[in-house]
Length: 233
Image (tube, rainbow, N blue to C red; front, side, top):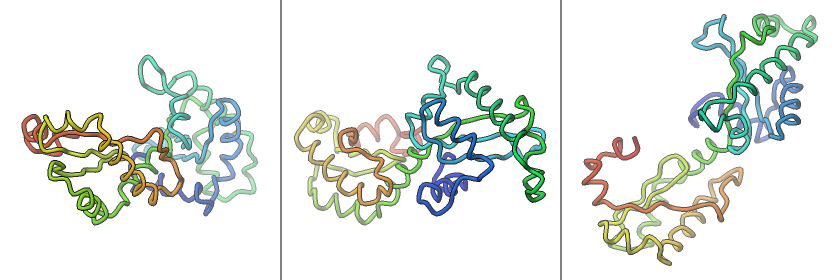
């Protein structure tokens, strides 16, 4: 679950919206994870790495970014191996004890290779981050242009959105310094947040933590060859 177009994101979004629910087979594991690690699990998705049936994996779709952080190793910035192992073992225990004989054949096939925890790769994602990306992306471009027109400042070159952030570009580095800690900067933040919250379906953006970044066209042209790919690389 990386982009708003991912099927994993879309299926998890339906759960968050109350349109669907987590698969019954995964409910016990989700409950166990939530209680043990004090997090909120929205969805659990099972598939195979590169569609290789000998490499099963489960994705634990947590709701909040802070919840995903609880499963990261602060030293390596990778997933915490101990917690991966704990979840894998619990997954194997729950699925091996689950009553399968009355289930359909696809359920039997689904669990065929995942009783042994050593076969299961566990990884974690969070819904909040992608939902915020989607909210920002869903603001119509005409609304961004309208906002820039309303600001009516010749020193503001452009407004550019990427993922869940936004950057206001001044014309020059000197202007950037002038606006960085100004009341105008605060006002721009307020204006953009008011626009953004209309598209924030799940109210994940919080005003007290929201900010807009400032940069300059001069920096963009000089140091990034006027190329968005280089700028966001």
